[in-house]
Amino acid sequence: MMNRRNFLAGALACLSFPRAAFAEAVTLADLMKDKKKYDGQEVTVTATVKSYYEKADFSSFLLFDKPIAISVYAGGMKGFSNEQRVTVTGTFYVQKRLGNRIMSNVVEAKSVTPA
Image 1: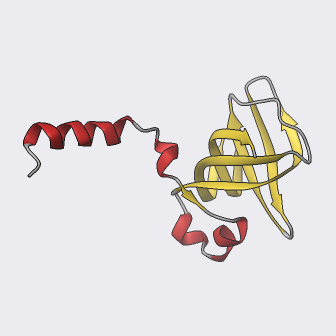
Image 2: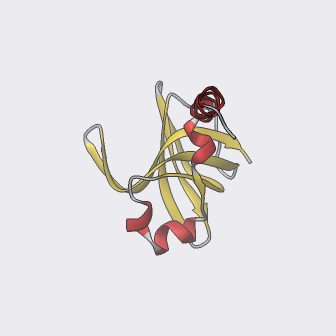
């Protein structure tokens, strides 16, 4: 039987994992098919970078998997390139205000890694 100390240790261990470890892996087709289900949820998506744009403090790009594309905003992350295959973990929004722009079907990235 689990005692209180073991329970608390297990609960704390679960909390120490990064949130990205709990993001649901989905395809772009999944996101577009059921946008409302994923709106505001953390997801992990793997696809190809298109229309890459980089500024001093962020990058943005389309994440493309024929014929579907979504926008990605990656604050503080740079160094990617067009045609690069990446895995993005972040929060998906059907509509999100970023600065003075309103973006549709966008992932606000918490991490972007080569796939």
